[in-house]
View 1: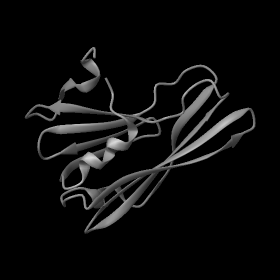
View 2: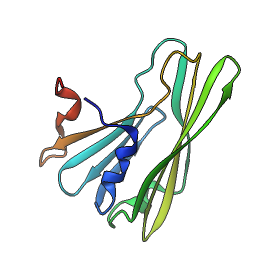
View 3: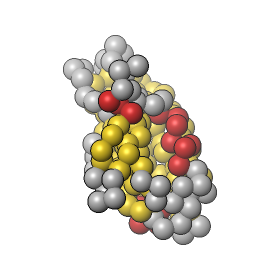
Length: 134
């Protein structure tokens, strides 16, 4: 089961070893052998993706996260709902804002999903909170 999108705050105080970013997934790997994934499982009549990343994600690696927060902005799309989700993370080296764009006909969710994974000593994901049938 995935966590609520606001639990990005769990990264506060963590030190990242790596960040992998695409327009469909953002992965944050921590020094305590965890990985946090942001993504959205696409469904009919919706579009959710990373629209923009402001800042250098390499600034998030190697120093503790001082701020990890999320905010949203609602709007209206041409044919339904619009939701921007902003994830802001900062270290002493700099900050990054990840903006997700989500539009839907109003029936489907445009929320970003967050899940935590265990990572083995080789850096491979071995377990996910998604795997539990709550």
